Image (cartoon, helix red, strand yellow):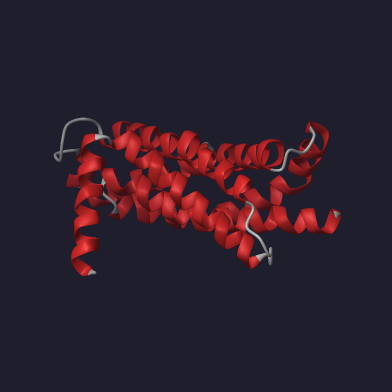
Length: 197
């Protein structure tokens, strides 16, 4: 079994090197699909809703993976430059720490609010097929508390990601943690659905 996992990891790394966008998109899609299966099981459904799983996998494949790919490339260009390993930030740890904190802050003030808003809209309009008015009201009601929870959780994840993960693994790490976050979002949406049913 160990040899199979090593071989799979080796092939994954090759895919990440040769086709980074495609590999990250597929990874995000699979992880979001797995998170929805877990969320459905936790919420007590007797039969898995495969349409919902596929629509969430589409979200991961078409949006989440590519968004993460381009976001992390952009952040790397902005904060590290394209000068290799001899950046000023690497020479002086205190500057590196300030840049890291600013990088996390920038991500939390820009992509975090957008991603949570977009996920809620996608979930309501596409996955659940609710009318625009209901989705708008639900987002207006629940978005502030979801975003406040995100700001308690995601800065730590961002800090770990930027501090310890090589650029090529940042989307993988982020997608893995995001699949856990998606369980939270799914359960939040599920509990609202149950209350209204």
